[in-house]
Amino acid sequence: MAKEKKKAPAPEQAQPETEAVPEQEVPETNDSPETAGPQEAQEQQPPQAPERPKKDQGQLLAEAADKYLRLAAEYDNYRKRTAKEKESAWTEAKAQTVAAFLPVYDNLERALKQPTADEAYRKGVEMTMKGLQDALSTLGVELIPALGETFDPNRHNAVMHIDDEAAEENTIVEVFQQGFLCGEKVIRFSMVKVAN
Image (tube, rainbow, N blue to C red; front, side, top):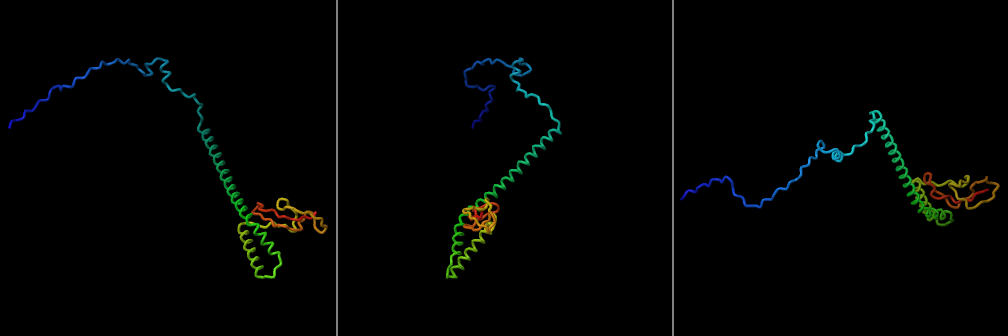
């Protein structure tokens, strides 16, 4: 076998011929503000904000404390307002629900006023009425006192007037329909007859 001769690396390898591109002369610009002209230096510098008077730390602390107190007061007002709105919404929903059951209350009350020979029937109506009254009181619903009371236009609805010397002026002498209230909210006004 013949020994292979090692080829010595060529001092310069031949590269494929490429077309030489003449270098274009780029004008050198020196953009540094030190060497730029006065107009160019002004264009390159960012605009400076007008100088503000420096505040001492005590004044800054007082302003921060004032902002904190205002924010705390606003949050407290917001909390109270939302709690009040929530309570108001709950009372309104309860009042609407109770108002839907009031015709049932009226019918049971009329049934109790009718004479009947069937004691079991009467006892059943009384028990039903007692259950409805208990449910209403559990919800915080109360009857508006009317008979013998002084007429109050905020709670009573006068549908009749009568001249009765035995009764005092503006006294309720008869109740046609019972009124109800939930807390301070009137669900239904009492329908009454008032003596003048």
